[in-house]
Image (cartoon, rainbow, N blue to C red):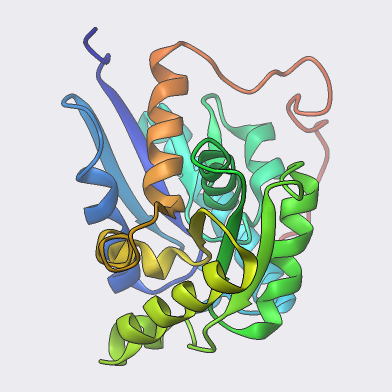
Length: 241
């Protein structure tokens, strides 16, 4: 079966262009011929997302990107931050499917073993990951959440980052008895294959998982239902400042 041609926008909710480029490289490496991946860096918001405050300020940029995608012919969207910021709101306004990388990674990991461990960046983000596991019904599979204590922007700049993340993943599967690792930051996407090779277990990167999920939904002609909660927002006036 040939996958129909489609365009998937991978939206980086932060404003760091280099991170977008790295994520897009990972997404393009796995999509089918005919699927066009467009990387979009948020026009407004934080340089990285490591707090509830950062996440809240990133949502307007995500929605602005989706609005651009609607005008620009996007068939589906990936929200490439492990907090899945603005996911529900984006689903209300997008004509195609919208997939968050945390949800996609956790669901993908659940197909590969009895349980997974999440390895994220800073300890302060662990609670958000736990909330999402519960929200997505993944708490039965999620055996533990661990932090490597590397700031998001240091994942690319710190020469020891890959080694530190790999060792955090090793410690996590040993502590939790997990079969699979979920990388809890889009900035770790390009580490996935090497960590899996080092540890000998499946390691799931949410960017690629979400991109392929979006591609599959588009190929099946599926989009978010507009019957109820995810119908277009009621029209009203908004003050944007």
